[in-house]
Length: 192
Image (cartoon, rainbow, N blue to C red):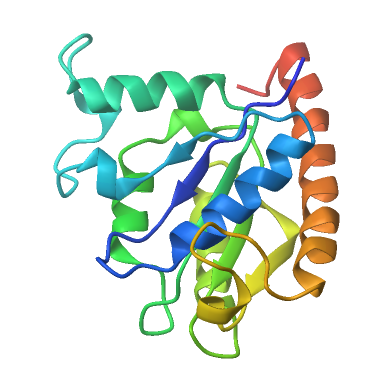
């Protein structure tokens, strides 16, 4: 059975570059036989967090939250694609993630980070590790940082630098291993 690994994009800016990274990593997971649907906050248009999904009475959550909750409950792990805004996590990403909680439990996450500069978004990734762990989806040890994203990937997410495919392969291999291992463990039961 193939893995279901939603790719959660973190930017809603009009000239956002993260869609390039999302397309790039989605292709890598799909080439491994995984299902990697895009979760795009620009398309979702989630309101600023007022109520978490679980705080709505059963059957009364907005349709967009019901669809996401269903996807997240079926997921084997989560791929987070994050920019670095002011050395931190983009607000659209935090808002998207904060609408849910239990749906993430006992599933790994993996961080693809990027920036226009040379650091590749790693400062935001360090903060994301703490947030993702608190949400119940700790991140794998590897990151996939993409510096100078505007020239590293074209608009369709095709790599313009040879090192990217090799780095993505290792990253995907590690994440698939964790996702498969935790799926087996969830099937046997969780601590609570």
